[in-house]
Amino acid sequence: MRAMKRIVSSVILLGALLLPAVLSASALPEFREIVQQNSPAVVKIVVQQSAPSAGYGHPGPEEMPEYLRRFFEFRGGPPSPQEQMAMGSGFIISSDGYIVTNNHVVEGADSVLVRLSDRREFDAQVIGTDPRSDLALLRVDARDLPSLTLASGDDLEVGEWVLAIGSPFGLDYSVTAGIVSAKGRSLPTENNENYVPFIQTDVAINPGNSGGPLFNLEGDVVGVNSQIFTRSGGSIGLSFAIPVSVVRNVVDQLKADGHVTRGWLGVTIQDVDKNLAESFGLDRPRGALVVQVAPDGPADKAGLQAGDVIILFDGNDIPASADLPHVVGLVAPGTVVPMEVVRDKKHKKLKVEVGGLDADDSYDLAAGPGGAGQGGGRLGMVVETAPADVLERFGINGGVIVREVLPDSVAGDAGVLPGDIITLVGSSPIKSAEAYEDAVAKLGGGSSVPLRLIRRGSPLFIGLKLKD
Image (cartoon, rainbow, N blue to C red):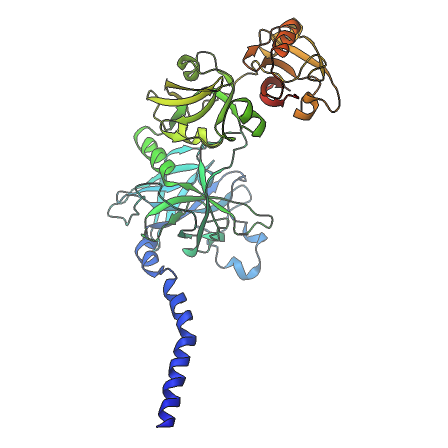
């Protein structure tokens, strides 16, 4: 009897020890079904180029360790010195052969080959590309192909499990998993354009994964893997995917028209810091501060002004300036949408008919009115009326140049620099030194005041904290 009790006690103790491990294992996600169902629709993309690409293809065979070379296959043998083979990933979105990948995978391609998991190969046609979102749409001449489903919305949450399938370094149909680390990451392009609110994950993504799908646990595509942050050339747990809302918008336009037109507002914006928030009457730093409005652009026609802070656009909160292009870019040109701004510390509602920005268009605004500085002892800077040649150079109709900023002054503490051109103090336009002095004299003690200036050709707002 005692022996039996000891056995029972041992079993209970063992169960107690194993229970946490069993519960922990049962809480982990199961990826096998997702992989089995979706892998057939993930493709490997082989690109041939007549000149070396600056894209994200894998290294050539002579650059690889011997043990890796056998994994890299080249159609028809190794490329000649005048050719370059690059590889990436993609996925089929319809049974009639439409395929999504990254623009940088196929950019400059002379030919594009698509290889399926069952080893079938097809020459692909590039239907259209969109460099601003780094997306491309291909098509192969085939029917009844396996395809993936794009998630219906952007309800992905930080901390949620996600899965990637692709061909890192040419290693076909590799599967990696991780979690969503952040959403809405702004990664401006080399042209300082920012139309994609990237999904950040810790999924292991490497060169060759570009263009491959990112799945949620339902097996729906929630993003397209596009970029990694690395110091070594390999994954360090910082990867970025294009969210499905952008993918769906771009793919629909490429399929219909072969090019992408996105919403355009016609403003230059900047972030709002603590001092600026106080000076504009905001309860906290938020919104997109308008520093310049394109003449006759959509914002100008809607009555938007420099100094307005956009806090709502088409029903979407704008926590920071980088969030505004994400929202505007998804609005169809010609659509009239509401927006809310803060002007002179009051909330104002406007309606704007969003303009269109085609793929090849560039709407960089010329430097317009701006400034930061102050002439006179109160703010601690010496200014003079800007001469006509300076006004003409920057395309403005008035302002004062800061000639000197005194140390430990209001202007110095705010970051005003000699050479800045001031065009607005608070809500008062500055056309001359006299107008500047009048505007400064009206400022109340202890308040925060926005100062608009041009610095090295670019408009900028700075918040001044006045002394009592």
